[in-house]
Image 1 (cartoon, one colour):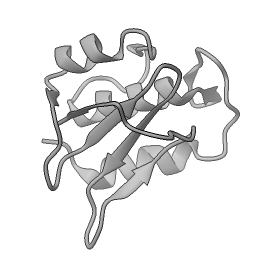
Image 2 (cartoon, one colour; image 1 turned 180 degrees about the horizontal axis):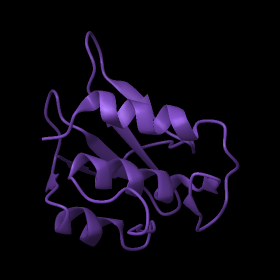
Image 3 (cartoon, rainbow, N blue to C red; image 1 turned 60 degrees about the vertical axis):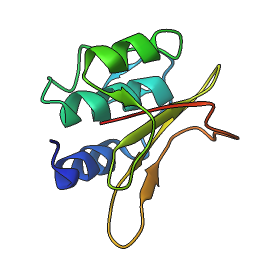
Image 4 (cartoon, rainbow, N blue to C red; image 1 turned 90 degrees about the vertical axis):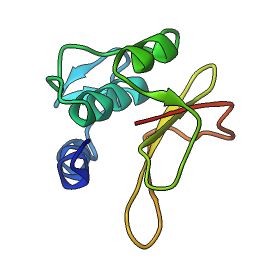
Length: 111
């Protein structure tokens, strides 16, 4: 299982960097790149160099061991046709990490 502090440290390190479509470096990325980094770190993979897109996110998350659904205390990734976001569990309430606004979460997988 992932260490939440590691994920939050990763996100804080890249916070404020430019949105770069298809980017995969600390210099900039897009929403699916950030979700790739977070899910890679959560599952013990190298953070950079193994990113997914909104088009293949479901298959990539399942390959990383995520399961469909939500539950308390889970790292939950949501997406729609063009954006992704993740909610990290923290006390006393979950913290959403996002770089793009999601109007709804039509699909979600958890770790």
